[in-house]
Image (cartoon, rainbow, N blue to C red; front, top):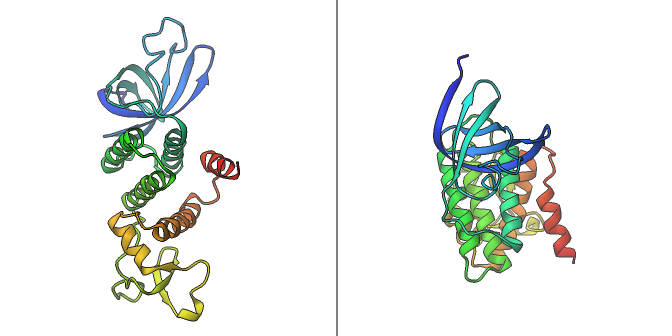
Length: 243
């Protein structure tokens, strides 16, 4: 395999870890090349031009070259336009990064995921009313679109028998099959209302019941597709809730 060079590629840093004494290994999501691993040599030196650039949640342009699983980062330039995140917005963004690290395959471009990720970061930073319901709605929308892009799209408008979802019915959402209508006598914990499914399809989370039920459904779906992998950001959310 011959080395390739990629110049000025739109990217976000998802994760960094120290490498040797002065370098970093990065996991980055790029728009045209998907999730890639890069080594940034000497970037931890005080006079490195990239020392303060390789921040998570900030839009960058990267230039790299190499072959194999880990390539060499040559240049990164901050593109601006993204306010710094803090508080609950920052925790939400860490959760998005963990999803991408655990679910996105390496070197598989997903331009729609990249663009929606960028828009979600903007929304998290710019909300004038950053309450818990707003953040939860942002996360549900991102989760839904991520699963769709990965080929795990949710069935939200029709049940497993092909019938249109009815707002006044209760359903049991079966993994990899979709929603199955249940009798009123079986409509207990673990079921979801038709209205919630329709609201999820429309990405409308103003109804508190739809917001709560969609959160539970997406938690189950994410646990299924993560296949036992634990997310540190979710544990932080739970700890904050307990406090």
